[in-house]
Length: 132
Image (cartoon, rainbow, N blue to C red; front, side, top):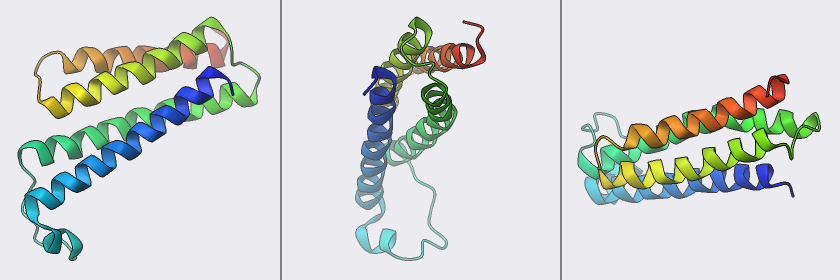
């Protein structure tokens, strides 16, 4: 499997891990019975639970942009070039760092990891469009 597709799989696995973390955080924060109910009138999440929800949303958003580009690159035979390989690596490793930084609640450096992931996505986009 090409490295770009492998990193897409890893990025999807990261989303799965983050979803489990936020689910556990929700149960710990609100209780199993509350989280198993319809959740009507549920109070807003706080602290770690809120950060876990935001990191899931943020990673899902990034993956929504990245995944189709990798799949188009694969379908059109554009994998294996310097831009797609480096772009995929930048995306995955920065998103992994972003998740750890976000969950740890570390301020100010999280946006840097986000920007690196965006640069990786833009590199793959440029390769798919034939401008890289």
